[in-house]
Length: 182
Image (tube, rainbow, N blue to C red; front, side, top):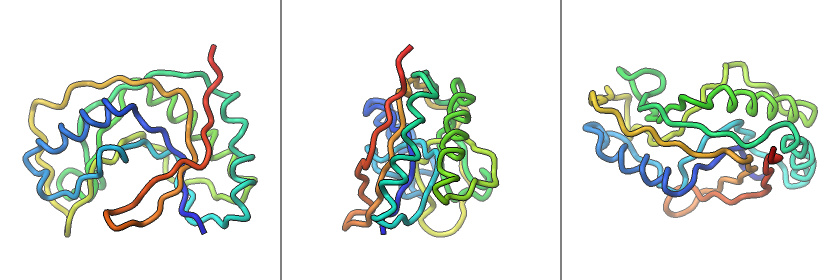
């Protein structure tokens, strides 16, 4: 079984800037920060997929590149799930371009449903997970000065495998689906 998800990875300079900004939050010590290279936008978590079913997942996602053109997104400050008062997950939000990410996430849902993946019940909220609490929920103190707005291009999606390792999880790309250029 392969633990998989569909995602968009920002360029390394955006990952680095987000990681540094998260590290400088007053409450960052309460969170186990995600390593810089693993910061991404999850479009759909698939969970465990049998190796025999991997080809059908890859094929199901193939039309995604024809349905979208590259677009830009921008980050929009920090937040937390389920709330800033009882934070378990620290994230950077997405402002500009979030409607395009929602459309891509919806298409991923539509394409994978015939392959046996249930649609998500919750509405898609684009965010980049930056950390998780070390123990229990904590109050997230977000300074008045939010991190700078970071812009980056989304030019496709990736099917990714997540495997546990000595130093946390490791990601490896299983398939890449670049969007059609206009």
